[in-house]
Length: 282
Image (cartoon, rainbow, N blue to C red; front, side, top):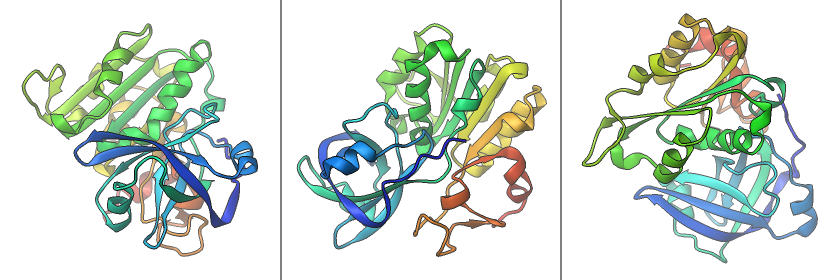
């Protein structure tokens, strides 16, 4: 898996918010640019990695990067406002400053799966860690087979990037399956659990890779379904979420068995975590 060098693991670099988008009542996207030109030039990341965003005087949080690696001008982060730091970040507007450390962690194995179908299974805001994969595949379409996007949300109103999903569904060799546990008026997709969609995904298990992010129960159910259809364990990956605070495996808050999610993940192969997911509390 690709793991580019981070610009710095020490003090945060100052970045300016250049754009802010309210995706839903509780979810927003910040596009930021590093103030130091040399840092901006040096910054590289792989889809699936994350940054630590620092709100001055409040604290910092790990946020997945949702940009394409070739988007050199700005760095995008989609954030759910639900804690002290993220609620503060939600108040930022264009021109405001944040601190940035990163990128950190291990990303998706896109370099190793050229020519394969790509199956993305996400739940809730789990779509953010894989939206960079969607951008990556669509901009390099000749390198991959089918693109299958399976997304589940609790409420229909929780679906962000709805227009993008509708646009992606019209592209060649692209299948979009979306479910909401609770629908709404004019909801065009499935009403029910996202697990009900797994059997509809169209891919070649002999030449496919699956990448998942979201609630662990959903990912476990998706893994069982995909493995039952013949997808090898070696081509099944998950992005794990834990309480990441230091981002370099020193504080121990994100320990998962013998690994640290911030340092050894957040992307893991199914074989690395399947035993841990079988036990509540790991």
